[in-house]
Image 1: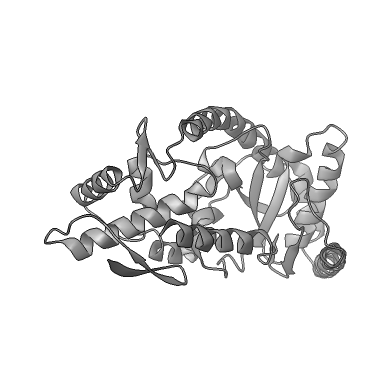
Image 2: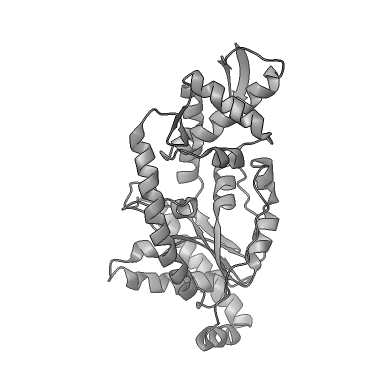
Length: 321
């Protein structure tokens, strides 16, 4: 019996017989369980290499293999068709395979859409986020985009893009244009540093931009504290040709008028979203709607979905051990 700490909880856990390297083996097993527990929230089994990449410690190949084999023999985890999971359930294996295939198709569409979105004023970088960035899609999957804008023009860019999005509702294509996370070049570090945000950053897929996504990843190198086995992340996506309209709008608003307009749009949007939060509006999935706003960012309110995921993660760890 060994006391370990996962999340905010201390607990007792029993593993199989102890070899000379028992303390190291125990920590490896603990890390494996943390990875599988996180992805189990999304019913997503993992390959051995994927487990290694999301471990919170560096391990040798033989250490990982030995730990996985022991945990399988103890029925603490299961390996089905090369995928590791906490559940002995073939359905989630089939679900992942189907989701990976659907994601391949949707990713191609997302790349084309992002090239179009780059034409909007002050957009400097676009990445694919959400479940699609984890190479998974189903019939309810949205195409989520992460947007980096020019400093002090985030709200001009966001307003232009969301005015266009209103038109997509007429064609029933609004789920292809989920532009829900914006930062500008001035403030690219993610302040909520936890397992959820680290996973979102490391899985972000750079698609179009002027190279600013590399700066974003450099500004968030704290994620290596969570995932030391991940290779360095760079953002060298395709830079589409900028349109005459984009250049013209930026030229006309590169002055005091543009500064005042950006500030006005920030205040206007903040008031509207505060009203949504106060009236407890929910989206199509039943999740609370909320937007955290500032001069240099517009992002989902972490008090809602992010906190919900972290709370569920802690609950599953407690349940598991």
